[in-house]
Image 1: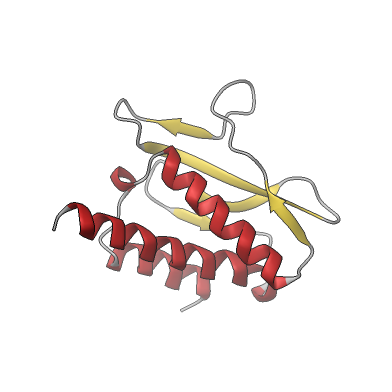
Image 2: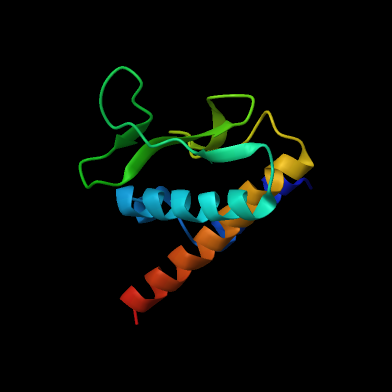
Length: 127
């Protein structure tokens, strides 16, 4: 099983769903990913800001403010706009389709850290 599949399984095993993800959670994921990117010292520079309106919208929310679709994009030293993590409407979560194992690592590790954050937050709500 590859690292992308392990991350998808981690999300499922954490009993998380899109209903647990609103804009605040997307911003938390971006914060974690930017930290991981900086620590990795790779060719990537930062996560692009999500766009809720306009021609290049990359976040769609349902009536409750939870994501239906979210595409987080990254820029680097030699590129301006590539997939970081995509939450597709059909439930599929994509991870850096362009990246090799080295460049993928900060995204997978950051995603798992974010899942742990969401699990803990969810646990506190229901305790």
